[in-house]
Image 1 (cartoon, rainbow, N blue to C red):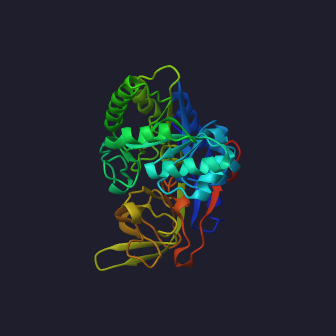
Image 2 (cartoon, rainbow, N blue to C red; image 1 turned 135 degrees about the horizontal axis):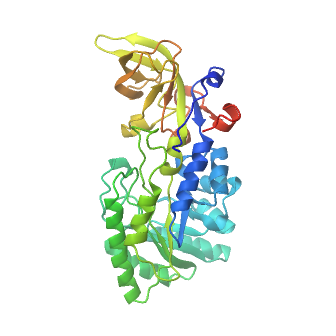
Image 3 (cartoon, rainbow, N blue to C red; image 1 turned 30 degrees about the horizontal axis):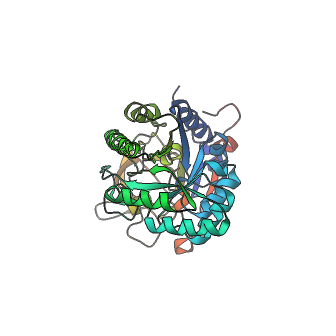
Length: 393
């Protein structure tokens, strides 16, 4: 049975828009599919930056996943939600001393280190705490993930990571420092990747480097391949859950691990994106010279992806789903020309008060929301509260 989101329109009518609606049944179904497909010797760490809603985080933590964090605040939120400190990895190019010290004191599982300079600082701070810091070196493998330039991270010259051509120097430095323990290597080539070929290429390159390091007596027990698996923004109900089995099979088949080595993944978008929708009402239908504008009460401050990445989200008319269609630019009220959710979008005809769902907004939606224009932050509601008993998906 395919799990698709149902929208309780009657309950929505009583709620002030805009707001985020989360399908918690779909989230649990997604987590079960991910867990069932995970290879042996592997651990998945949820990329917290995708969605840090406390209730969503608690459901994910309860599934047994670890957490991938990129700030001290995310580490604190992950622990509060129930993630185990030893299952937390700390990524990010600009870890502050305060954040590093807090992570050391709570005993996280690994620092994904993104420069030799950072490695030296972690060593110094670990010494002040009287501990040894577990680290993995984030290496850039020169792989083009063929995704948006803002979310491509594995190329040679990038603010993220250490170029693979200087990996040996970084490894030697890590092995020489007295207060760090080199656990392994970390790779992340980008986000919203829709073809498996970049992951196959990554496996082949990692395999080559592991053989070279092994020949020199360097054992990498921890191999972290990051995240990046994309989702279907065009047809969320056709593909509500990514094909985790095909994704994980690439690594199981292409990357041979030695005894004692563990494989780590950092999925974020693929876990939560399809579970969330931004619900908004039409304020006005404006007739332009050649266009119609559906002006809604949600703005780019509520969902930034279309303005930042020119991202496409499917939009549905919940109030009149079977009306004769018309074409609109769906725009928000924020005083920026970039505050556009869709151009030339064909929708069942909308009127003032029509309720729309902007789909696939569970990742990088609520978590990136701001109070720009002094607008209020959107609230969040959940399917297991709003759907009548017995009518869950």
